[in-house]
Length: 281
Image: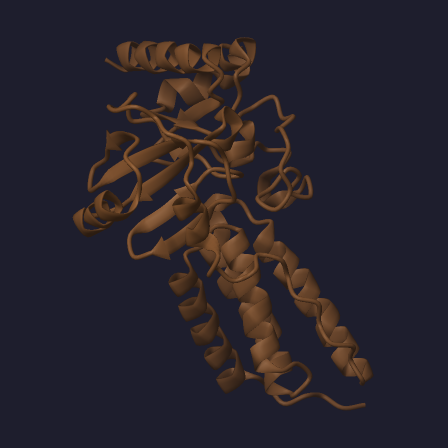
């Protein structure tokens, strides 16, 4: 059974690749973990969610960036084990010039039918994928139960769908206008030596969150916020600045806005409550 499933998945992937759709294997709806050379961001996270570019690793690595149309790579011995354990296929929508509007529940589907122009649709477990011709910036939770998957994102391949694909409308592009900026804000110039050190720590931890691999985003965010929280407790960093910096970084890494704000708030509350007194010279 496993051999038959692998053969079917690889055959589908090769067919997609030959039609210009970059693909990679999925297991339990997740891409393969970063390879040994890139684990724990040892490679510096290039390419990662903030910097687009092809993945040069010999194994499937770096999530969406590993998606490829190179049939020799897809059938290579290095990728064989991941296809053997795969239970699905992912593709990089923007790499094929596409945008997927991921509708996660019936209410979101109903909204789309009332608001968006008809296009090709693919049924999902709980909702539908609406696929448009054209690419754009990706964004999570643009509305309740609605994500935009295009640049620097992957989507699950669930079949060709039905209906005629239409051009990406301005209605969809406008959905991300209200999203907060995904760049890390520039910190104000510190006025004390301790503040200067605190700002450097914040910059380091924010970078770690923004470049973390998909499977460890929540844990990395929690650890990073707690590491910076003591400087908020000591008065070296404004809480609002820290919350904004981590929110931007976490959203750029792909965490849903509501989830990352809750994690940041709770982690800061814990760090402020448990911070030890500052040691003085």
